[in-house]
Length: 90
Image (tube, rainbow, N blue to C red; front, side):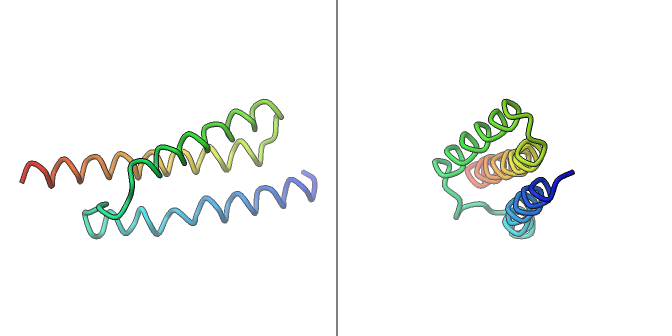
């Protein structure tokens, strides 16, 4: 693995774990009211394109870190939908 790959993996890992506090906050508060569906949708679309870009370049750092970021943000979206439905039905 090259130094450039290590740099990419480090940058991607830091970017990816930056979403953990948001997901933990949603789980703790049982609310995702302050998240925008539009922002999540655009971000998920953008990250999906990064995943395809990583595949096309055969770049493990781009592919791996963005795939994990995509999974985390899809989880956040599912939590938002779940909490919004629960709030509406109450």
